[in-house]
Length: 196
Length: 196
DNA sequence: TGTACATCAGTGAACGCGCGTTCACTGATGTAC
DNA sequence: TGTACATCAGTGAACGCGCGTTCACTGATGTAC
View 1 (cartoon, rainbow over the protein chains, first blue to last red):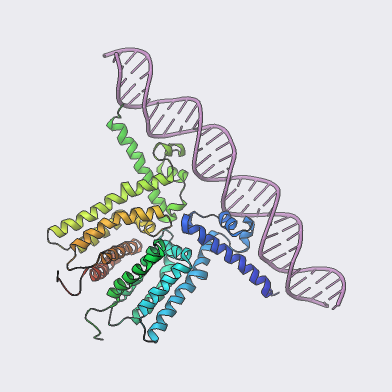
View 2 (cartoon, helix red, strand yellow):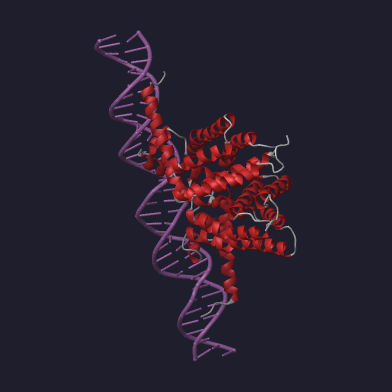
């Protein structure tokens, strides 16, 4: 028996509400402290309905990465590749899109920044894995021959810049953006110039 | 009435046990998820005895920063200043001392890395405040005229390097250390040379 | 077409459990004189 | 010096509460024929 599109959509809607509710609460109280009942309450469903979507909060956390973080990183990688292909500055494009993401979805970005260095090894591994694609994209788009770890360091600065932007007044984000481009550029540029 | 040194010492001993127990648990499960009873159990005292030392877990968390993180950062600042004063490389000195701290007290450093970008705004503010002293020390010790935000970025890389070292095989920490010196140097060096 | 059956997201009641917190007490130690 | 009192870290019992989880049920929707 196959489900109808309408039922699937409705189920997906509630599942998404649970993910968003968790992000909302995690942004201020931390993902680690959240309980199943808390997430369900915030999402507007009964506690027992939680189990229709996830086995437990751990499974929901995993879904946060695969359903929300992964598309975001994929988009940033696409932005980098598109910029590089059209002769534009991939670094600036990625930073600007990242700052737009901070404005669009601060809760998701707080989650990424928090769990990237957080106590949960599974989150750390998953996020590092995701971000390695962005590292690679920035690496190939950078002029000259910079080592891989320099591109990794640039992504680390990007994450920190996102964290700073999350706390900053929106008007102060322009300064953060410029400083971020400056420091990332230092890491992604071979001072000896293009001598490939 | 003043307390005797012996009683003070004993009280301090239990207080320290609570702080260490919390760090131990926080390293794997996250500070945010910890409860008062959990910390007391790990420290080997009755739950009610917790209140003889801290009002709640929030007060204990604050003490983690002031009692443990602050001295650590102070030591790193001292290392930087001492190296600079004796004509040695402050950057290398700080990185090496940081790596030693990873080996000495991984739980404390996991806490610092986790809460630096974590969901608790009070921790973020406290840690940024602490680390600004290290940023300043590295800034004045760096040759040429680099902007302040470049020194801040270097400290961000240091924190990330600490996080990587925490997860790495001890034999792989040498590589991390060298890459860290390399990338931090890029940020702390003015490519135009010393033209003060 | 209508009718009988299957699926399944959502739910309320109920459970046992660990939580934070209060309270009164103990016993070791310090102070007064 | 001895004796009476004060301080205070540690404790066990007890509390009310919210937690995760189970269960049986509802009702809307899909399928079979």
